[in-house]
Image 1 (cartoon, rainbow, N blue to C red):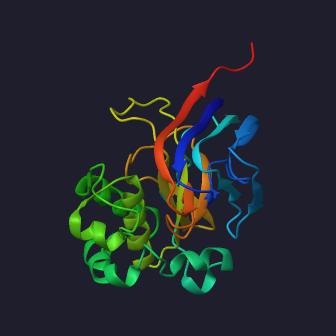
Image 2 (cartoon, rainbow, N blue to C red):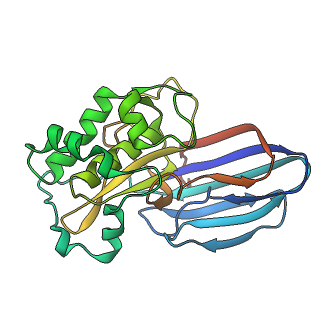
Length: 268
């Protein structure tokens, strides 16, 4: 099926300000870009980072500027893949590409949650069942609250406060999985409300995590905790630091942000 995804940002800056953007779909995934328009307010230089994320460097001009991205993307018409029998992989047998997601990162320190993770989930069957138990626990025990966290809130902070947004739910899931010796990586993306009741919240960028089980990555979503259709990955990485939508070096201020992700009509 087709989905339409995109975003529009308006910034104001007292002077020319360097910036880095990650708003375009990842080059690898279950999605395929059919058409897109990319309208930065200044010439952009593009590259792929160490995780394969599409990054765009540009200098925001002094004053007000508008950046817009819009795309039609083909996605599978099925719900997220699942295999409740997927087993854990022994650390010695992990591929190098997955091993890095077992290590501590800027916002996800498994060492700080090691005892709590094993107290809560040590008796749960290893593999899919254990990762799903982590996901269920976060969904049921962490309260979604806009403004409860900041750009520097860590998974340990969320464990203590029991509040956060999808970014925080995701990072707590990652930290707990790593503490349980399961590689987990951060995903930022667009998530349309297909075959679900739309939440009473404005559309925003979403995040979830992927866990390495039985030789591949599987999707887990502590915020929504239900299979979904139409996920479009923007960025993958160790935590939200690697998947930041916008990073600026200067005093630029975000004035407005609009994000969309909806099912699109196919050709007649």
